[in-house]
Length: 326
Image 1: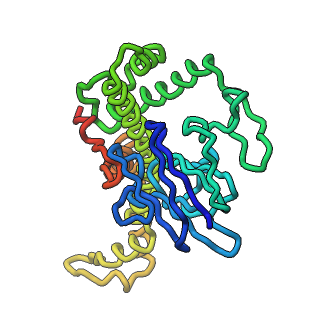
Image 2: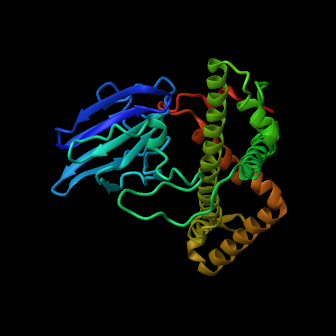
């Protein structure tokens, strides 16, 4: 019978074994899950992933979790089944889960090594069970500076964009993410004099702001799609030839003191519709791109952006705690 052994990266002494007796097992922090993972930090979603058994064995499926599911250090695409092989390692939040088809879970490898198969060659990606190492660039401490600078650059750009385009700015907080240099960030997170509690608090702060940054770029995409739709709807509403024709046909033709139905004069109707359409285009040109952008594009973008930034139940944090109106 297949088994899994669950370990915690934060507690080397913690271990739990589970026999996989059911065809389908849900993994998550929800109490109703088949394999519940306690997680006060909410890195694990309520229903994070699912194990399904078919005639070939078990498959792993990520349930569109907030912080993803890793299989042998590879991020899984949501709702896509991934067949499991003996010795595969799954990471969900701080939990590392080792899968064994014969039930003989290895006890010789500590938790810290469960996600680092490539020991003996630091910085290289892990080797998939029964496979060969994929060629990759070795990550060394010298890469950390440029890597952090790239992340902080994205954070600074996001802060500027929010303040100038959306009209919100960061609240006064402990070490705002976008104001730091890579050296300051490394010093803030890796200070050897910190107590374990303060170190965890600072890493949680770093984690929350990364989530906030990720949500920002997702919200930008949502805003773009909403703005695109708003422009499309605006043009259809104001420049629809059929609509202009109908409006022109409703206006009577004046002859002395008489008001005659315009449908009696098709040529006059087409001429009137043409003039109305030209006037609409002229008004649009007079307003200019800036006015059009503010009335249509920005309004739709901001509404969709702020809606996307609203906290979800599973996030464990509220984006609104970090920003206020500029």
